[in-house]
Each structure stands twice: as C-alpha cells, then as structure tokens.
Length: 262
Ligand code: DAK
Image 1 (tube, helix red, strand yellow):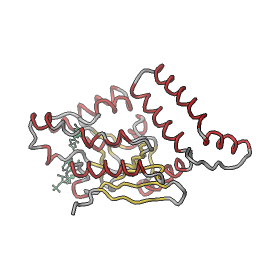
Image 2: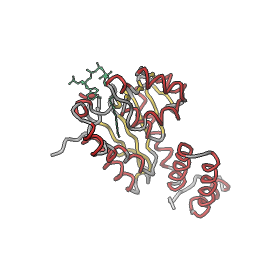
Image 3: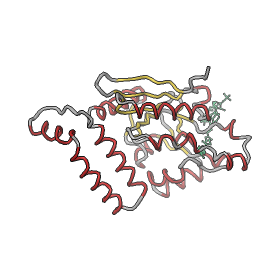
Image 4: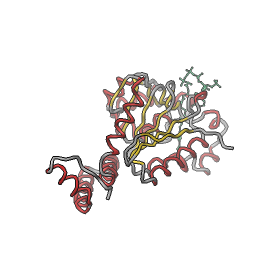
C-alpha cells in the first residue's frame, strides 16, 4: 500500500465545500519528494473536477509547510538524469492546471520548493510562525520551480535578490509587508482563517471565481494592455451566465443570491 504522504478532509456544509489537503511527511519537515508531489497532483486534479468542491486549502504541520524538495533524493542526481527526466516538471506544474482557488495556509518553514509551492497557490495566508526563503544557493543550486520568477513579481527585485542570493529567511511580518502573503494570523487561528476565506469564496458564483482567478494570473504573464483586454473580454462573457442575472437581481431585491454556478 502507498503511504499517505498527503491527508485530505472535506469542510463546510454548503452546496460547495472546501477540500483540505495536508502535506504529511512531518518528520522530514514535509520535504517534497516525487511520491508526495504525485499524490498532491492527483488530489488537486480530483478536487478540481469535483463539482461539490468550491475551494482547495493546502497546509502543512505547525513546524513546516514544506522545507523544500527532498534533498536526500536530489543529492544523487547528475546532469543527464535531471535533463533527460525533465526533473521534475511532470508533477510540479499540476497546480497550475487547477481552475478553482487554492489557498496556502502556511505555518513554520516554507523554504525552497516549499516556498515555490506556496507561491503557486492563489492566496497565501501565513501564521505568525511562518518563515519563507529560497536557500537553494546554500546547497549549490538555485530555485528550480519558479522561485527566481514568482518571488520578484511578488516582492520586487531587491528583496528577491536578497533572499535568493543570501539564503536568509523572511518572517511572516516581513512577508506581509513585502506583499508575499495576503494576511498574517495567530498560529492557532491559521486553519480557521483559511477555511473561512474558502467558505466565503464557496458561496460565490463558480464561473466568476474561476475567471477572476484566470484574469489575476494573467497580470503575471503578459503586458498591462493585453491583461486589461483579456479582463474586458472575460467580463463581457459573464453576462452570458445565469449567475450574473441572479447576482444582480438578488442585489436589487435586497436578498442573498442563490448561485447555480452556471
Ligand atoms: N529535504 C530532505 N530532508 C529534509 C529537508 C529537505 N529539504 N529539510 C529538512 N529535512 C529533514 C532533515 O534532514 C531532518 O531529518 P533527520 O536528520 O531527522 O532524519 C529533519 O527533516 C528535521 O530537520 P532538521 O533537523 O534540520 O530541523 P531543524 O529545525 O534543525 O532545521 C531547517 C530546519 C528547515 C532550517 C533545515 O532542515 C533545513 O535547512 N532544511 C533544508 C532547507 C532547504 O535547503 N530547502 C531547499 C531544498 S532544494 C524543481 C522543483 C523544486 C525544486 C527544484 C526544482 N523543478 C520543478 C525543476 C526545489 C528545490 C529545493 O527545495
């Protein structure tokens, strides 16, 4: 039997619920090995397909969201292996296929691939205990899952250089000031806050939520004018949904909307 390197739970009692994924290699500080990334990818895609799921939350342990890719596995790799296996595009990019919102709830270490995984999520909520960093330079490599690209877009060039080149860690308060995380909460409130944010999203129109996510992601990919045009077209398309009629009618009738996600 395969070890459960992730644990999953369903939360909420509305028509759309939250899928919680917990990274589960606590003794290794959730170091991300191939099997864990496979299991995470499968769970993400299954929850994305499941119509009863509105939002996904990913979390780790109190001590570590994830302390990076598994160094004990990587230590033996050589150039031909990482090049020919396209190390490890297969299961590290699955997150980018998910159309529903993914919230990272981060306590403790989010380092290297752990920080990169958190940055691939849509909303990043940090406990006061969270520590972020890209320390790969200390082990003779550089970030390989988007760290040199997503970190500067989130925190600017100077702080990204500081973190990538010195390998220092940034605490939750600094991460919030820098714009890496959306909010910082007491550690004991982390999961409740993340689940409450997910619950708020679950109550909204699924198509609007998925398209809003796609539009914000566009801001990271292209030019401002292309992004604004993309947003305009997506905005227009939402007038083809029943949820737009329902949302606006409900507002005018001063009643809560009942979205059918269509
Ligand atoms: N890999 C493997 N094991 C790890 C680990 C890691 N990244 N981080 C921690 N562990 C293990 C430790 O070896 C230790 O195991 P035992 O000795 O108990 O067997 C256990 O977790 C507890 O760790 P410590 O004893 O070290 O705990 P401390 O509290 O003293 O220190 C620490 C915590 C997080 C500061 C320290 O463990 C640490 O520095 N860990 C390494 C952090 C790091 O360098 N992370 C970056 C790894 S490189 C890519 C995708 C991803 C990546 C690259 C490419 N593609 C898609 C191309 C990612 C690369 C990386 O993340």
